Amino acid sequence: MIKINTKKLAKFFGYKLIRLVILLIVIAAISFIMIQMSPIDPVKAYLGQRIVSQEQMAIIGNYWGTNLTLGERVLGWLQTLATGSMGFSLIYRVPVTEVIMQKFTASFILMAVSWIISGIVGFGLGILAGAKEGTLIDKAIKTYCYILQSTPTFWIGLVFLMVFSVYLGWFPIGLSVPIGQLSDTVTFWQWLYRLILPAITLSVVGIASLTMYTRDKLISIKKSDYFLFAQARGESFWGIIKNHGVRNILIPAITIQFMSFNELFGGTILVEQVFAYPGIGQATVAAGLRSDVPLLLGIVLISATFVFLGNLIADIIYKYVDPRIRGEDDE
Image (cartoon, rainbow, N blue to C red; front, side, top):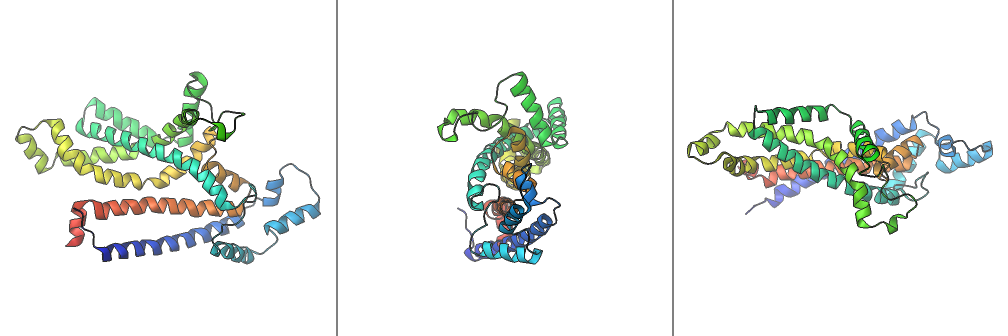
């Protein structure tokens, strides 16, 4: 039974909360200044090729606050944020929170499926490579991981798109719903069919690092005294791997997997662009290209919180779930 010191736990979460607040403030300030220094004129980016009079451009600029100084913009955005609102999206014409909720929900499903796939496949390949150290299987898996780590995510997505969608025709080229069909009328199987290829592409991002970590960890366990003692007692090799290897690697591997949220979120932006998947990644690119400052800042804060939560869960697993670490903290 896990015994947790309530006082230590409260101190732990309090410290993490303070760090989150400081992190969001710093990220928001840096992001706001960088966006304001962008050479892109938000009014011209919004209008595109449309020709309007100077008076109309002045009205739009006044509505968006582009005629204000940097200090006035920062103060106005902070006042809006203090009310619990992230402002109004300039390109979607709805509150930023509404856009983020809609887009992030679609992206979260994609990220969750990809995260599970990469975790299962990465852990399994790591166990296999570590158990077969030095063999052809181990070398093949290592080569595969090295290729994945040096290959851009968007390039993998384009290759998958050409092979499985264009040449083989197994999957649709993109989008989360069929062309000409409303999202409310899409069946579960239609949605799942269009999610498979983007999810596999995104899962490839996290497979390599987890596989190599699991492999190296298992190799070090194979050299331990208790592993050698189990072999000397006549236990089967795969039985020792299961009882001593997997059990000792599983919690650290899960911890590493939660710490990969930043790579997962970054890969989502690229994958969604390749497959025209209407999620938070596409919204981020659209907000950046058209200088939708409120939406872009809202996405920055949400993404920072998302990555922070992944690291927080990893810390909780490392400190309070692993009995070895918990025992060291209690001494």
